[in-house]
Length: 391
Image 1: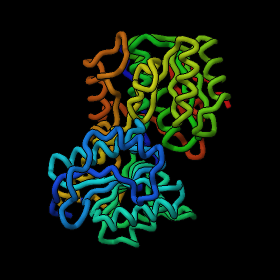
Image 2: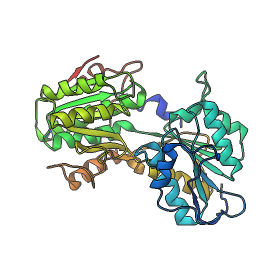
Image 3: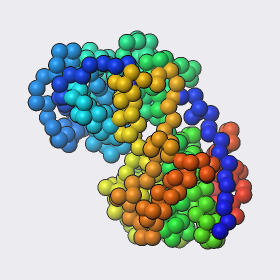
């Protein structure tokens, strides 16, 4: 069996990267940060919470806080993943916790909501998503005694001047490894006509796509399968649109069997097209199996694990602030949800074996070159896989 070795260069964006505190009584609040904030989305989040606040927190307020983006804690995405990790650690250790929702998706509103969490007693604030990069850049100086976990981003100002203080733990993920696992599993499961539909061509999305291509090639070479075809596109946005659905539908019509929908709500367009055509989808970031029966697996960032570990470090007195922490297969930061995946051939034993190879460094991945997002210009030695890049 021919062994393929692929060379890895982590993108520069991933190279740049908690103080012991006493715990209060375990309580959970699902109230909004202000009495006036009673949106329908918040009500939905409240209904989804399994335990209501049973009592007031111990003096000092709620020690752990999550500030959501405009989504809710049951959004099956970054908010929910971050909330689950924070909640798990808090409940295991009897620490008070609460979430807050901003009223607007602006830097000022995010910063104001962070302030409300701190006024409520937060010693550690978790902020999920790159939209918090600017608010955290300001908050780290404004609240030097408070610690922050920033998921999927690094603090910078409006001019993209980056700075990470010792009270901030930015977390990034090695998306190319998650994409690799998804591409590998798809080919191992018997799919030969694949598609990658990304959103904006930002580094995280590009890494997912490049990894996906390399995973498909690795499985093809391993099994001696030739004729793997991948059609590859970036829609230029993260929205669900008729155009994206139409493109996905045309791919399926022309023989594509499974499409990796890698761009936020772009995936919903792909799922809608797959539903119409009786085809399959690979989800992204979180387990999207509940979103559609068409989803066979998802290339995941294990958000809850990363937040749990960060909170644990905070209480252990080993908060890794001042630098970016990168979560990979080596620290269980990315992966596939095998328990909900709908594979017919690919199994847990195979998954564990390829996961271990990645974690042990036996497989390394080619990264995209500077200012380039076209895999046909970087992944030029694919013996068994043909990639067609469409703009």
